[in-house]
Length: 553
Ligand code: GLC
Image (cartoon, rainbow, N blue to C red; front, top):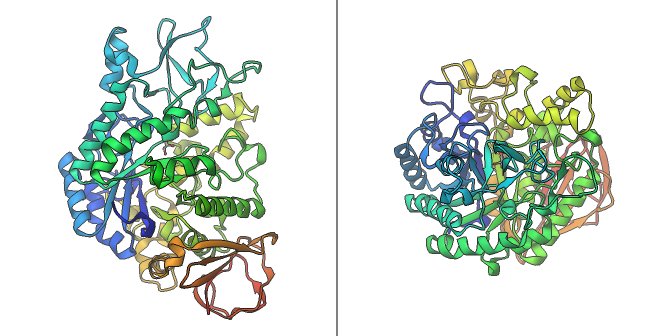
């Protein structure tokens, strides 16, 4: 298995990465063309979001054939070429495995639909409705009922879009089918999988109503996440598929707690190697998720610090392991969420990079983050994302937000924000395509693009490059202990990363306001900073978003 604890992983959302075929849509040959770029940036592995055949209701997360490639992205031969060229360049390929559900266009579902006695019927959750209503009161993650009518009074379960039917993992045939798919891609040479929404594959037995006393649709929460069999089925996959291939597995853990991540990732449990948690990325959201605007998307730096502290200490103490990320294809751009896109765009982007690279856990870079890409100003007519299109209505129907406000808020949080094409250079369409791009390009590309930033030694891109080098040359950042200081400071996060050889001190002002701190007396050199380097002193004044990494002598 590749050394994932000493790696940096770059996430590609293929549709918007690079178009080589002149159709305005990113593709596999486009990724191949950019391998030297990724190598130059210094990453070790690439996680590629789904490339499989899909009707694209959820842009690849609705798979209609696991064994073929979406023609918009290329062919199986292209994928083979990518895997080989990446390997030659020393880059690992991590595929996305979407196995909680399939597209309703998948032949399994089509067979199940056509013929109730087909063996495929039990691949899914088909249930009778109740008095003209769905079989239970569960809310989907996309703001609608988790049940869709198949025919007559028969419904099928879909925790996501209505065209993403949940697979019934209780059926051994389903588990074998998934294992076969994994074997197929591992045999082709991929290094492992990011397993989509993997902690929702087991549902509460009998699929009962959640909060039966309450009216309306209910978020099913502990009825659909981290149920007992998830671990049983992961152990089965680990033994039958991952171990024989010495392959890597990263799980997306919907609303997962540190305790659960420890269970899934403790090496002696033989389940997953790493997980994504959601605590930081959902900061400011209400309890129903990103379209729940009841907290007005406000969060405090104390919350940011508390979450960091919790996950760092728990993972290190209990042998759990996470991947650290600040944005991905499911959330707005990290700079809009945690930084400042106006006055301090470069500085706050570097601050976030320093934060992410200084933590215990593997750092992820989401495409475009390395050049400080930000949310475009989206209008309703620019929306493409299923989640946004449906959850915006749910803001009104479930939360009672007036439609015109719901639309404004949806534009701020929609996943479309992070799905605009990567800005490669200042030429037309940001150099992403020479055709009409499938989605709007952020008009700021003339100033904010890869080419410009690679040539500027002070750029965010060069800062990322330096973060990767620093992480590589300081083992304590990868595996060292985490010890927080200034825990009560309202906006400055400060911690040591230490191993037997070295001690590093990280100081980060999370705020757009200046801050003062008082430190214990010590000597150190500033080895990475987003402001001119400074001397480590007992009293320090930090500018907005100022961040430093000191090597303590
Ligand atoms: C995961 C994916 C997201 C997708 C959902 C359903 O959360 O990251 O993009 O919509 O699963 O597959």
